[in-house]
Amino acid sequence: MGLNKYYELQRTKADHPFLSPFVILKISMICYGVVLTERALNKVQEPMYCFGKLEPFGISFSGRTNGRVMPGPILLRDASNVYINYGELYTDPYVVDWDPDLELFILKEDEKIIDIVDFVPRPRFYGKTTSKGTPMEQLAEVRAQKLIMNAFQRCRLWEKGNQCAFCAFFTGQHINGEVDCQDIYETVNEALKEPGRFSEIFLSGGTDFGGETPFEEEIKRYISVFQAIGRNFKGHFSSQLMAPAYKKKDLQRIYNETGVTSYCPNIEIWDEKLFPIMCPGKEKWIGRNEWINRTIAAVEVFGRGKVYTQVVAGVELSRPHGFKTMSEALNSNFEACEFFAKNGVIYLSTIWRPHKSTKLGYQPMPPMEYYIRLTEGLHQIRKEYGLVTTNDNYKHCGNHPDSDQERLD
Ligand code: SF4
Image (tube, rainbow, N blue to C red; front, top):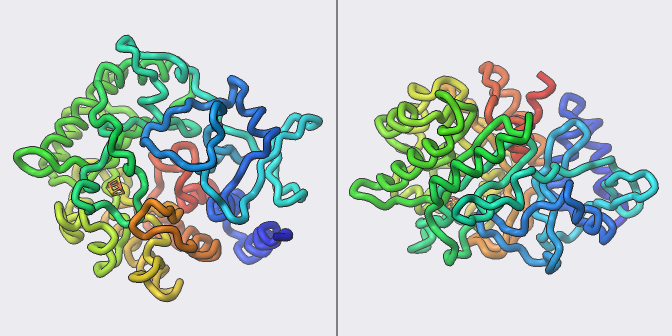
């Protein structure tokens, strides 16, 4: 394989001097993937690094070694974190090795040292159980400073094959649905005992359109779960609800009855023709235009810069329906970002990782150059509108190179 990634990194840094080198490295690591050497895997079994065995979203990837656990996200030297699915079968991944002499984790391509890295430390509440005996690690995923809770561990859009075309999250439909509010309260309570660890609480879950009116059950559940989390706080607390695009009156109720401070209904893909193909369930239950209208109306409830929407960037270039050229795909995303920015909504990208369990199946993802240009463009547009992500930046999510870039503003 040679040093193709190393040279690509060097070229990209030279061509994009205004992009953070850590943002460039992050994009490259997500595009190519990362695997751990035996030495690194042994090292991350130590208590400081070892994350739980249980996956809150029920994702099971191949390649995981029995009896050994994986670490959390990778930390770069600027404190941004990179979320990697370690068990995926990458064709040309980076390697993280443990150097016993330096006592450091090293990111390498072949024998070339690319950088020094570390891992998000294991949170202290992992390994503990709630009073009902539920393992807390089953209830919360952790990024560098973000606590990720899941209210409903399956997605009902899968029921009639209406799931999003890129989604592999909920292929395991055997897992439990609703979470228990007391479990959630106790888990957050325990997590907050670790000083300075968490600065954001995130709540999401699979879609549940059930109820007398669509989403009634889901809205009730989110209110209950957020109220359970909120028993640990006074008033509103730094948090985000990622959920379908609800009507304004429902959002007002959620805002008034809970401590949530930001909201993220994901559009997933902007293009009018591609949206119903890629998100048939969202089209069926809400529809693209209504999704957009509700997202904009949410700004009246949560405030400017407190409503987000994400795209799974790269799906717009997927085969057989996607755009044929990078320019068309970039223009579509920039148009969306500008439209939302004008309306006070932050439009973020995440990087699409094709997976064989999805409708789109495994197929080559767009080149790194696409994500570099997208990151630069989205960040620039939001900057022109004075929009800054306070709930989804480098400290919290780690999945948005474009909001990581705000560190340089
Ligand atoms: S809404 Fe779409 S992306 Fe989200 S879990 Fe359901 S199918 Fe997957």
